[in-house]
Image 1 (tube, helix red, strand yellow):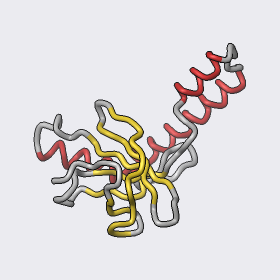
Image 2 (cartoon, one colour; image 1 turned 90 degrees about the vertical axis):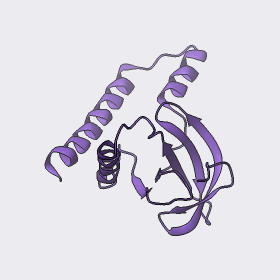
Image 3 (spheres, helix red, strand yellow; image 1 turned 45 degrees about the horizontal axis):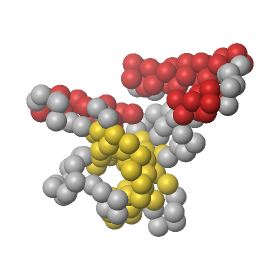
Image 4 (cartoon, helix red, strand yellow; image 1 turned 135 degrees about the vertical axis):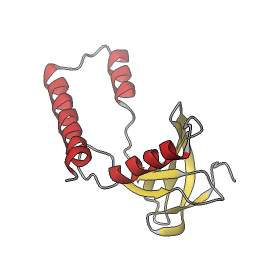
Length: 146
């Protein structure tokens, strides 16, 4: 099995060999994340989840079922899962998602703090409402299948 690095070519939403890893974005307890591009230079997020903590085949299967179910969620406040590759022997399992640039909420808050600014109540309210809408969409899919 090949561990992914910058330059690795993967299967993507458009078929075999359509994505190339171009930038390491970070890693943590969930796994590692890269930005990838296709032949038209469109960006994607590729996550290689850490699945070694899964204790048995049933838990691993449940994890992949959840990932596949999340691919069915379509909502403007939920990052879309576009492709899941779990059966390839040459690479670890990975998830291809839409790429959302602009940094994290933490990086935005850090920038405001560094500039001596605060987030106004209207922004906090808008963020909370967007989060509630996203959670509702995920809950509808998980609990009702719609």
